[in-house]
Length: 407
Image (cartoon, rainbow, N blue to C red; front, top):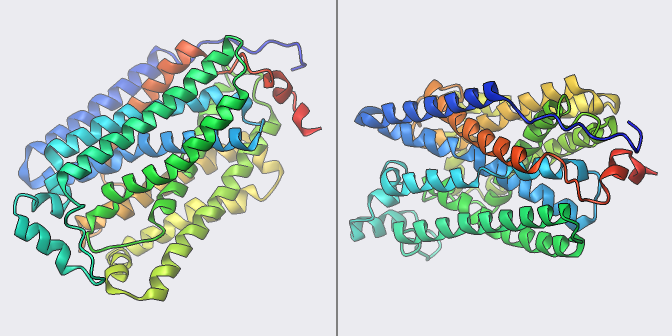
């Protein structure tokens, strides 16, 4: 495509895709409802819902980080992808819906401290029994505080997402948003670090009241960004066959491949750093977490996850030519997504199935997770149909498509 060739205006998605996404949503809801109906599978249902809600949550947070980080750094290579990235952050309301359901009916099945909240003595004793540093978390880990802060956090996320989209659409109307977008991005990066860390503490780390980790927030953050990059790769390659035909060239695919490669290495580094801190301290309240997750098949699953999230991207994408090859990017992205789904399962499921391996391939959990994925894609498709897949008003769009920023 030369600098004057127009970008395709083909429609985004079709009725079949929307029907498939809707079917996934219905199947996911039906699976959860069926499991939650019976006492014997109720806890399993809520654990699966907790894991499933990570799909829209991690993708949205990863997307907002990616948008903000490149804006703050003055990077331009993502310009043709910005509207696509904004669409992938549309799933935050799903996080809120899932959390409201957990707070209203599932908390006592997931968190022992929520279950004991009605008995002040037992609730206080739960934290006191695991306290070794003279502090007690019982006054902080209460349902009221948990609900209030988590809803506030999700609200802040949606506010910033709305502001990012509003600025982007204003640019389509001719506004100069560069300086405002940079300021918003820097503010978001700071707020995201605190809010996402607290969210992950309260939703995942809190499954074990006696586990502490100085690396928890950044560990979950690496998974969120890696998951987002993999989804972005797949969506961009799909849209490249339709409405983004001509807008995504090999140099943009190469950059996506490079990010996939380096972020896999960063994930491996953070995972090792978290383990190293725990290993060096050798404290019971920390080491039990890893001991639990190295037995009964969980250790083998974690090794497989390491292969999928780091070794595969590193081995395949070390080649410069492979980073711009669609077939290689698709294969790596799919394996990375499987690896991150395995990681969420490895973090969550041992808390409810300590002595028997509950695999990442557990069918009910997969169906509920697919329901979240279908709902998220429906929201993204609705966004792209309404606003398009390209930031048409960005003055850097055509020059970036033509790779002028590389010269």
